[in-house]
Length: 155
View 1 (cartoon, rainbow, N blue to C red):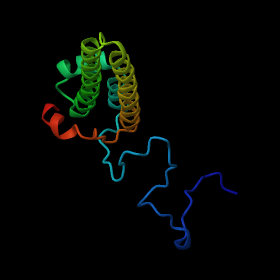
View 2: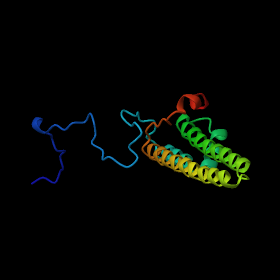
View 3: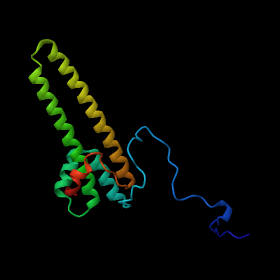
View 4: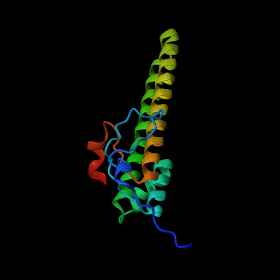
């Protein structure tokens, strides 16, 4: 009896489908993911991309400092864009609620509506950031909906 391990040979009748891997549907499946190309296979690059997607101050630093890797710069620009839109939406809602807030009943309703809109903006930004982190961790491309054509020239 030999102790040498030989690789298993697939029989012709047991050929598996490699074209489309079966993935489970998750809660965040509202974004298109079909045929996303692989951008990075290096673990260090994938980790830097994930950290840039997770931490906006680090992403702002990488937008300024990173000149070598287009993949890291891409995820840093996307994360920075998400943070800018989040802060811009919050600032606009604060200004509107301060202007209309002095009116007795209408001001209260506008402040309440402003908080609800801000919470919705924060949740959408969080969901997009989680999807961005997932794609960065796997080294796959991710396109931000409605913003990708505007920010494409920065990476």
